[in-house]
Length: 394
Image (tube, rainbow, N blue to C red; front, side, top):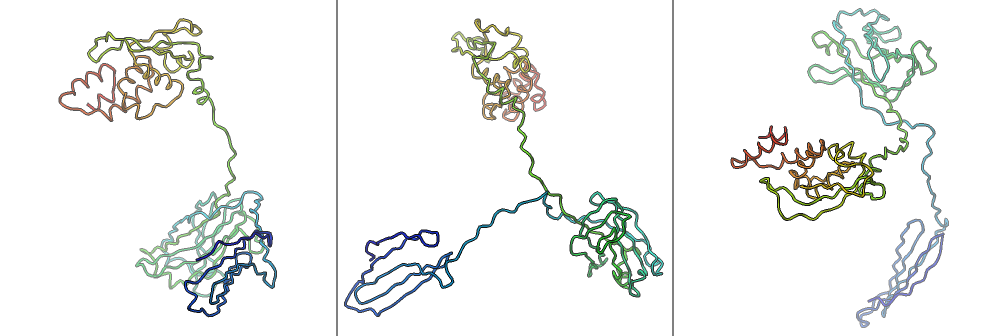
């Protein structure tokens, strides 16, 4: 059972290490324990040793730092790499261009005589492949040669390979560059290993290729890939703040130029008016927002006259507030639309908020359940409010 440990903090090698010494008593002093020295070394930048000694009465445990003979280990800090220019991206996916050399068996086998493919496009460059059925002058006898040439007035680095697949699924013939190779612009002279064309003088035995023909055609897949262009971080460009600024002005009494008193009698579902009036609420707004988004409501008030509020009856204040919020660019929650779809449709239709009406109608169409008992009422309602989506649903 360890007794309370004594601790001490020391600073060694630029780090603080807490040294603790604790005493552990044996369960019984009647059975002597042999002397034991246990040394455990843990290395994590610095060497730490744990020494334990036993005797017949108790155990002493002492933790201390042991400085290695080679000295304290010095840690190094690696900085992030510094990029100069746009770094190259990862290699692109392979682009495969199949070339069909028809009637391969009948092509001339004279050395140096080749058959050139039409130009094809890859990575914004024009290319062609020239096949030498009898090889080039430097080719071994019986060997077919291949040449890939860049026909664009710009250099490019590509990794390429030729692939010829066996018609019966047996072993394919493949020859690859194995790394990115630089192709200089067309018309330039070869300088060392860099030139506009790459040659494979001993591509394959012609007798072997004759076993790879498909209806007499030798199909050579030219596969190419290159570095994706390095991506520079896009500069931060703030978005247009107009919508956010309009929302900040929603309900601003200091800058508002129109005022509404909303409440009073609310028309029931049967067309009767309730005698008990609902509590009224006051809303401040800006005429320009109404003129652009709720023209019918804008025509009901005069900008600048806030002393005499415009009375708006037959609408719930909460619905009117949602409609005003929408006119300032706000978004009505889907839950609110589902719960109050018909009320929002009524308000949007009344005050000319066309998009809000369509949005609420779409939500209502998704939630309404058509039955034999309500189908006539729903059709009548859709016709009265000119709800095309609801009519189509019915």
